[in-house]
Length: 151
Image 1 (cartoon, one colour):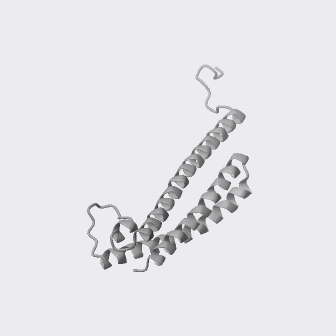
Image 2: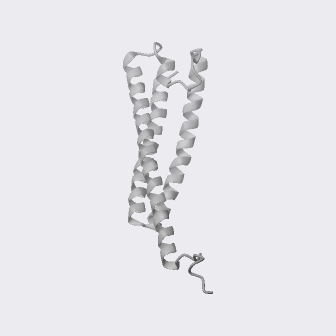
Image 3: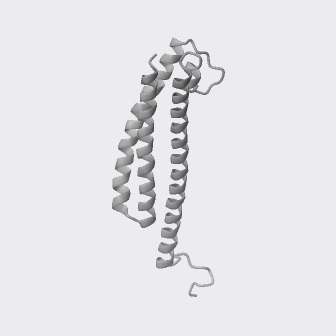
C-alpha cells in the first residue's frame, strides 16, 4: 500500500471539512444577522460539500478495508481502527507520523464542526421561540379565561 494514497485521501477529506467548517461559520453569521438569502445560499453550499465528503469518506473506508485485508489486521473492538493503527510497524516512522497527524487534524475538524452545528442549533431554537412569542403577543391569547367571558 502506498502511503501517499493514504495521505491524499486524508488531505482531501481535511480540505472538504475545512471548507465545510468555514461555510457553517458563515451560516452562523447569517443566522445571527437573520439573512434568509445568505442562509439559503450557504445551505446549498453545505449540501454540495457534504456530498463530496460522503464520496471522500467512502474512499477512506474502502482504503481502510483494503489495508485491513492486506495486513491481516484483526480488530480488538467494534470501532473502526485508525489508518495509522493498521499500518503501524509496516511503514517508516516519519510516514506514520504524517498519517497520524493528518488523522488527528481531520478528527479535530470534525469536533469543531460538531460544536459549531450545536451552536447553530441553539440559535435556531432561540429564534423560533422568539418568533412564537412575538406571534402570541401580536395575536393575543385566543383562549379566554372563564372569568373573562361575558355573561
